[in-house]
Length: 508
Image 1 (cartoon, helix red, strand yellow):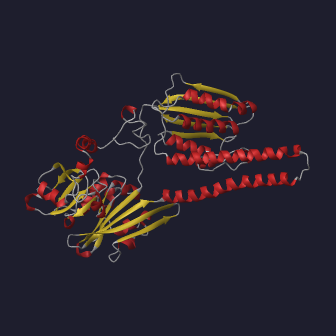
Image 2 (tube, helix red, strand yellow; image 1 turned 135 degrees about the vertical axis):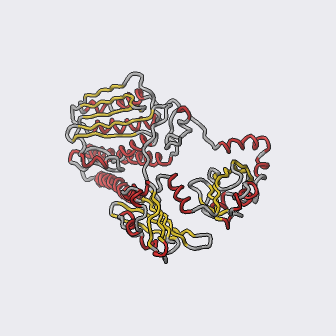
Image 3 (cartoon, helix red, strand yellow; image 1 turned 180 degrees about the vertical axis):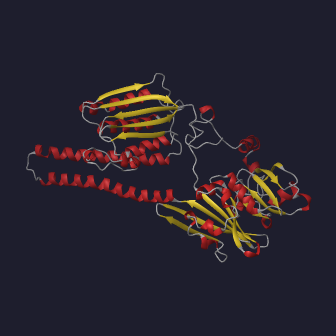
């Protein structure tokens, strides 16, 4: 079964091993190209296209099955000459090509070459090579509904009119649309369109479905903290009559949130860079002007403060580069055997040993015997632990305690970092992993940091299929627990969510 990525197959595929995945059709072409050469393969296609394509013919057609044809051959040749056309004297109405994500090509366009560019111009694609033929007995609205049922993340509703009265009735609804409206699918069947459009989720789209509305229109629906994009497209009969309209509603709340976060990120980054530079400049001006006299010893505290500011800027720049690099890397750098937890924990504790001892912290490391390696890069693991142990040291109390535990649980390696520090307010927990976020509390003002550490930790953990959780009690302490996939084993699948709603409206 398909699975979300990362980890990518090239890192952890079959049996948890690095695996090369390609379409069987692609692999089958390799021997012929090697034996006969690239020029031969390029000469097989028609009209400048290269190679062949395997199509799976199905639907209302005489000859079904797999056929291999030169790329660029007309669709009509595939359907009528090879497939034998529609059975029992019926006429071809349309062909659905490219799988559920493809498009339908009407009979008038069947002479189109079966190549990538020509199909894309008609709103279709080759895709996996699926080709479903439909004759005049097929209902295109019903076919659209079938596709929507195949893709449960695309809720679909169909409206049609009731005879001469012209009353628009609700005819079809898949489970995803019913769930998005909070109604049983059966309860929506036969209901007036006004009832459907009366739901808050569809408020504002009624005028887009009017008889005199444009054939294609897009509108943003704003409901306070939730927004979506509604697009309406008309569909026609063979004679050109508008039978109805397809309404698609896509949840754009995450996109708006990303835009706002990007603006906030830039503003915060400018502040984080400008503030220390201004402080450094002031300190340098005092030293250059000799405001404290000729004795250099008087300037040592100022230079030390300037040095600390420079170190903070260097850390910020390093975190920004790490943050951006995570987004640019398509595949995380994971060694074939994964990364050893014990070695990374020991190196991290040793790195922070001076600060731990300076604060008089009692520390402990408890790792389960034979702890398996984690499916994460060594440097990424060190970065994760460096941030978590560093925070447990900075936000702890003098003579408090710090512990690192490691064990296996439900197919994951779990690492928990616990402290007895100032804790985190419950109201601040939802924003804890936001970029540049730092708790606005008196206890945190004097603590060094730029608010990027936990955001980096979350991205590093989640991009390899892991999770991170936090439990905290204000004034008592905090525990961060990360779960990382075990090297050589695939990570469990996360839950899927619906993001797109679609309606098909028929008005005849």
